[in-house]
Image (tube, rainbow, N blue to C red; front, side, top):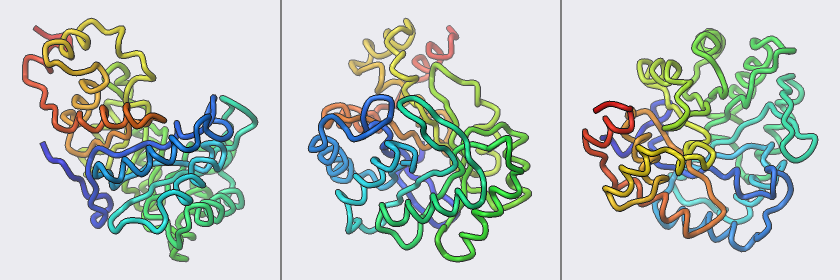
Length: 278
């Protein structure tokens, strides 16, 4: 199993990253309940060797990016911060796509300011807007890439056919879809990314906290003396070398538990049990 992956041919990252969505209030809305703990989580992630952080302008909105910029700038050499745009927020738990070029330009300018960056290493279209031609949305990102404000472009929440359409418009280096041990609906997308050597970044990599209900997961965790979440992360890391899990948390303790999963190697009997095979 490889421990690193190079995004876009020039961004070498440790495959176990950190997702910063949970560094916000309930419903991914507003500031965190404990801002000091949120800042401590970010600092500890860097101490533990994380060099890939995923966020989005819609987390908060703006809260997650602001916390990252205020806490970690000036950034350690080699740190890759990926962010996303293309969703607007009306309130807690509310998400609406907006892929208009003018919105994406404003979104990127705002992200650059909050993250204190001159260029975003990886910028992903958060969701395809059915009201806006994909050519227009990705064309806007391509223009901003030409202006030097984006290094690489990715897409999120896409099917295989949508990924192929996107790649006809602009070079794509990553896909971020919902995927976990208990939610494998994007298997075909992951496999396509592996074939193309694109990064696959699973969101909700812990199955939205539902892992404890899985008998096989619990049995493997008990046999190995680890938590169900650690099993889930280790499974993702062993699923394919292009998978970059980004488990998120607002707790330093949980962060440390998640990061320890990078050292867990599931054995063939574990993998068979998790796949429902004897």
